[in-house]
Length: 127
Image (cartoon, rainbow, N blue to C red; front, side, top):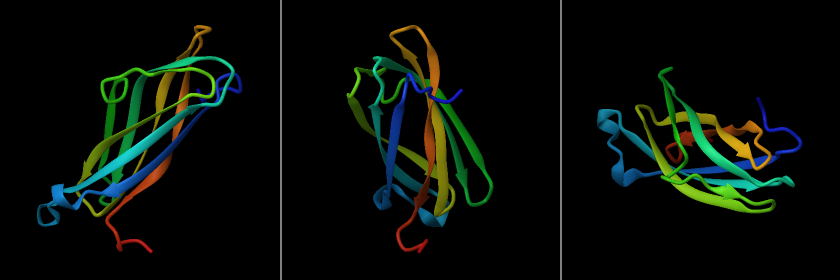
């Protein structure tokens, strides 16, 4: 279920290619992504878990589920944000990621905050 109007959570993501950890000759392309989660609602909410869907250009799909993010379950007050950086590895120079965060408001309501699709791309591969 998408974030409701009582629980508007904004998620922005920026990704970068990590050349030093990648090995293109062996199908290893590493990307770092920085996520900013912003509670734009009137109700505090806690991030419980994450669900990522990662696609590469060969059609391979990876799903990642887990508690919290980077070992934390941030509790966001209205207007408060949380920023973290993590990484993903795919077998092609271009791919996409999207997903959702499972949240729970201080009112006890659980909801999903969608993570919009974003591109993983080696520089100069896409125009």
